[in-house]
Image (cartoon, rainbow, N blue to C red; front, side, top):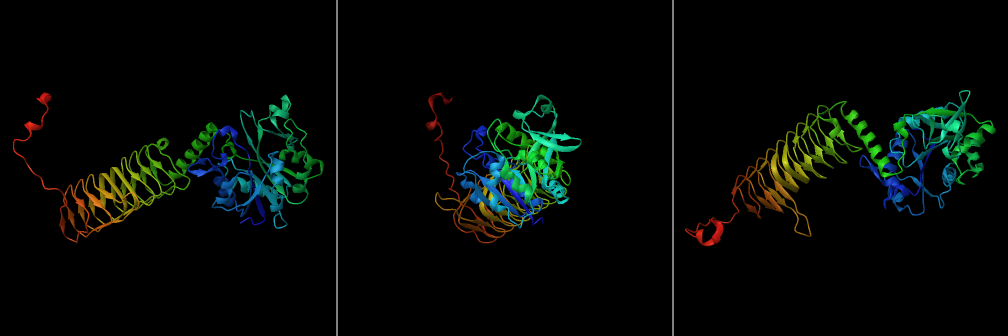
Length: 439
């Protein structure tokens, strides 16, 4: 852990280009809000002290699981002003501050660590830069004789400076002491009248501070200001997730499979086309996820088969070798080893024992409009097609439920239960019920 580093994460921007009531940094990439990606990356870099700078209306910041210290920037007067809003977080216990941005969801811990290492090697200020074939809109990193000389915002740059393709990511590492103290001396004599953190470079050079530039891949530092850029970030995230998954698993049609930030696939998992993994999914060794399935908050054990066209909702736990077939929905329910729910069924708030078999059209009636109840199906039980199990109810081991039954009472082990209306045939009554034009 880099215990002496402080991450200052700037997230006070209004995000007006998103045109959303949801704060910009709370828009998700890979199912996780952008701000949480950034906080996680700082943790991955070994930083365990984080200061989050937000606007006065950011109540969301108090509920982040990462629990950073929160500082309010009352007015948005530029990046240097934002950093100074958290100046009290920079104590003698810290020797460097890493300035990050809440709308850079693809930043990696290794990239942050690389910039930190330059500061550890003696630089007072480290600028994280990237190269772009089309640098329009970015601040330019200006070098003179191979050394950093300035960072120029595009609106303030000369035509020659705008031709530079080395661009500023905004991310900066600043050593405590004279370098960090110089942030307070930044002025607002620029086109927008704001206090730019980038001006620290020229101030620092004038004071003899050591400057360094660390280059990062463009994908790592992409910023999100509108929904189009959000989609671009999502596409990059998904491409990375697919490559990571294919280190151990087979994706039959990779571009059609979508992952969440925390999806875990074990060795030899096979994923067919058009599968969506929502947050909180783990799939065990050798399992197969068949086409057009959607999984969220679910655990799939080794050797199980899910789908096609299956939906696993939060709390679904599919045992080893179990089968969940087409048009089956599982919610907050456990399927034991080798259990089968092969088609057209809903299983919610239930425990299904090992090797039990639920026939087509079986549903657990778990909700009465006010409360939810549990259904227990013991090992080896067989539930016939189109049966309704009205919870709370228990089906004993190896019990057999006749097709079309509505089961409202517990069924003992090894019993046969039939809970359906008796069929009555009325001879010659059909013609009387036909309309005249029925033929």
